Length: 353
Length: 210
Image (cartoon, rainbow over all chains, first blue to last red; front, side, top):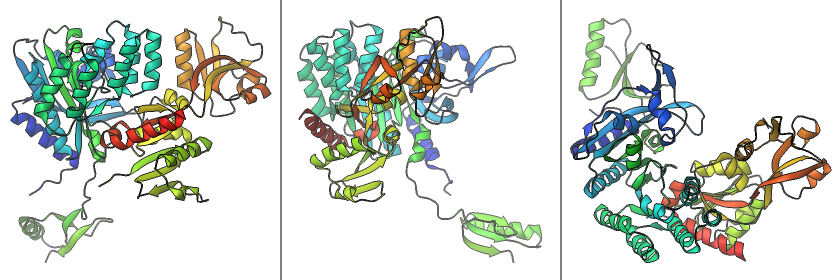
């Protein structure tokens, strides 16, 4: 019998089984963390607001707004091996649009430890598979922060942040002004503009970028992107406007989109800088799928709430129960009432004889 | 299947001007000229649907994906900071965001400055960058009245020609940022319609440069 799961529950089950199959183990965690963890890494969170309370010992606690920080904090720092984990948890965040706290289901995975190119590929493959489980019409967009970081390495934190903001919104007109203010030379400004505007299939974009850069910066990031795209196949876009907070992320960053949902449903990347901030020597990469956004996916509406409504009057209870069981044994759903409730949609109505 | 490009246009002269540019770029929708109160116009042949919305709401339609692209003033982008691509400066609808005060105003640094504005975020950001302590008074219209009646010391508002300020004995004391109309796109829509959106951007850029 099919359980009446809604679209997000079905997808969550499928994602968990994919991660499990690839040898990732489920990580369960408490709903609370000490607030201090979030206070120290505020910029890493999608929103500054956290629900806090004081526990019985007087410690300030928080309902967790994020999963990654807890996983990093609670995992051993092992730079030799790789720890592969997945999770399905609730997080509590302020929704940007409604200005109210919401409980959001998040499914995702993290690989922590000795992250090599194969690990990166595996995580990207799982991200792509996750998107395909959500919709066949999907795009995984990949970038490498190394290129833009190399072009902006001599600038101050504030100037870099401004440039990354312009690149992230493909705002080429403002990018020119910001670069001029920061004293970036014309050649580098033109490269930054090109990187911000270029986007598309790896086979078109990567040769273009290689030609553009032509010895100006280290092309190792480009080589990695070429290797990864060759294995990942279709439904991949390279777009250097995918930028996350450079204080936490480095290397590969990516976002996943499905047609019909106006935001990225999947977001991830390599976050070695966060690891350093938390005094870890090892590296890490991971992603999260935002289940709340998937509610917007179109799904077939059930025509009926229940197959059969079984009506009873003053029959003996054993007979009512037996009649209900007989219907259920035929594989139908059955609701037993004295009279049909208002608004209930059913295929058929039967009465206990 | 060819998907329809949904375009949010700001009601008014700016929207009409941009529609004319879109028409020139090949995205015509003659029904838009019919004199009626309809707000949504579609031309399936050209694969485009236009809707007229309040100028300050364009960014919301685009950020939430109801519109794939839209035309919006930079003032709205600075105030609401929507997560969208800002693809082009159209160099039309030009004006500036400015601080204005009654003629002869002198800022007394010993007191908290009272600022009346519709653009609280922009005003707060500007004075934060100046290290000036302020008290924001959020108003929804007729901002110019506030300093005259003593509700505020200065106002932060859009200044086009400066006529309204002049008629109310106010003058610009500082320009915060120049404003013009921008072409914005929803980030997810862009992944699935990048060719069309890039074509629109290129066409509008060419017309803007003409």
